[in-house]
Image 1 (tube, rainbow, N blue to C red):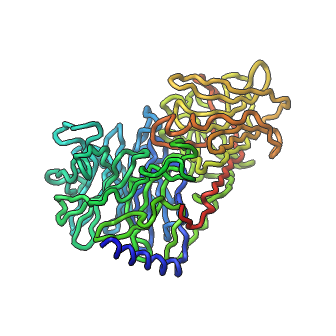
Image 2: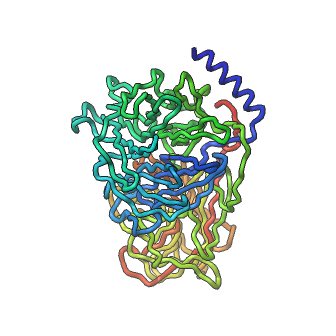
Image 3: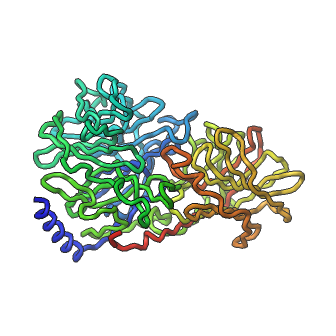
Length: 561
């Protein structure tokens, strides 16, 4: 039976390639954009991602072609909605899902340490979004909404039956009916999946569930195996929303865990998928994945990928016909490029000039406090006050960063900063967590201006001085650059633009990898100033921030890898 369907799909792919008008390149959202969820409203697509303890939380992206995305807002953009003070970077908001129904947009998500599962709503996906409505009865993570015949449901990952797990990682998928008028659960919850596709094999971490309806079946799709290299996606179906849900006998419908880890340019850890209808009526899936530069080491975090879906005997199979997730897929619809001057994907270089606003790609830690930064109206630039808080703490330090989106990339700044205090520092950081970062900065030591490079010390709120050089010229202006080359970082400074001096090269990038540092986030290049636990009235002015990234895989055009 499958050979017949394979012939039909292959024939369809040949015809599709002949008329294809667009090339979807992976990842469609490179860098730290994990846990994608997508919805369609008319001809428009909207996508959201996890942001954990970064602020604003949950970016909202818009596209008309599933290739070109533009950030149009954030779901959590006001501190009055919530903040993440006191939480580690890798906590905060887990796995949002976005839905559209009867003119209203819904996002369901989990604030993992404060409040649990909640729903916010908006009439315009660009915002403003409502304050969160918490659902205390929904115990677990990864909530997702489903609308069917005038009823609404919330499906989510939860604990083992009777809170008695049979093994580590034993979880369930459960559902409640939802009163959409009051955003409250209705009736009793039902366990839809216990353990996973085959509980006899002790499947772990069944999570990220979504419900769909197609023809006469309800489909339940979820991830298994954890979000690392054993990640996968599995599918179940039922004639009734309350089950029983039967697993597909050829699960998983997406994984890369069985492939040679030494293969060229691997895409790993794929899962946490969501299905969507493309502009031509075909089905596609968005999902997270990672691009390691060596083994399981990557600094760009978990990223958003896309792949076509084939329906075999009324079962969806992601990336059918390919063993490996591809770096590009051809699709048969028109491209709609956006005109955003700051691109989100592909190879690019962009410079942010701080005149009156911050690009939405910039992030703060835990909340946004506008009292410590402002824009220079006359000469241009971003003035940032030195705060006693540091990135090693759990507060709101004077840090403003953007994602490292490429394995080969750089961040650079032009900065004006003068000090005669050794505790005051201003510069450029590459940050993965409170305990894993490199910090390139200008400071003052023994009566002289110096440029310094620090490395964080895990399990300690101290920094190790790696390199230092005296700045002979007395000038407030300095240029700083951090360059990533897959498994290493190099650090540069200059007193004249484009006249770079190498301070240190070849520092181990694995120190900032997810495998070493842990957690669920990727690395960020950031502007960061601090007075190191001491009050200060000093400030630094950043004239511009530049990011450049180039990965060879973006040059691949639909080849089998």
